[in-house]
Length: 230
Image 1 (tube, rainbow, N blue to C red):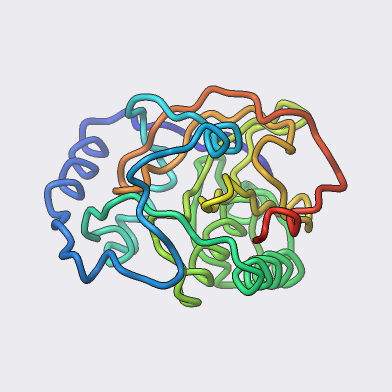
Image 2 (cartoon, rainbow, N blue to C red; image 1 turned 90 degrees about the horizontal axis):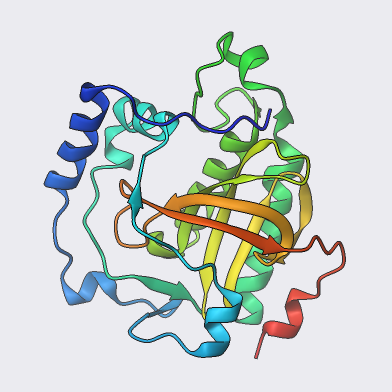
């Protein structure tokens, strides 16, 4: 199911998000260091063409807040400097392997058929089934375990080629934004999807979401991401 995740409507949920933000801690310089990524201090014009432009803070999907309520350790995390993955050949192989592993190991099922409700339920594939949110969360989890920086792994809400709500994982790299998608095994640049990007997590704080409202180019089924690797 590719349903647009709902937005916060109650003061309770807004309060919960505020609490998460309030409990975030500033990271030490050591926490921000990794050989897998580099901090974003400036953005070149070429990178700007390859990366979606984000706007102001926006509503947080209900599914993320509910996920945080059930799994608080996943969300009570420090605020960190924005960072990108270095798109090396090794890191690209890891991205491809994890994308394909998740796409092949999870049985697709709609949110309603899975949970018996139209209310968005975000979680890991605890029973081996799920819709787009479960795929994206699982890929994020596997990449974190592989050592990728949290700041570069962003849950993202879009409208797909059929104008249906859909959730994907954006991976911020030094060569631009890449998309891991359960509808396509190939990893594509964001601007080769044809999707309309609505919003995604902030790089600094996963409990803050930022608006995008931008079309991701046109759909290209054969995109050689390997050409972006140095």
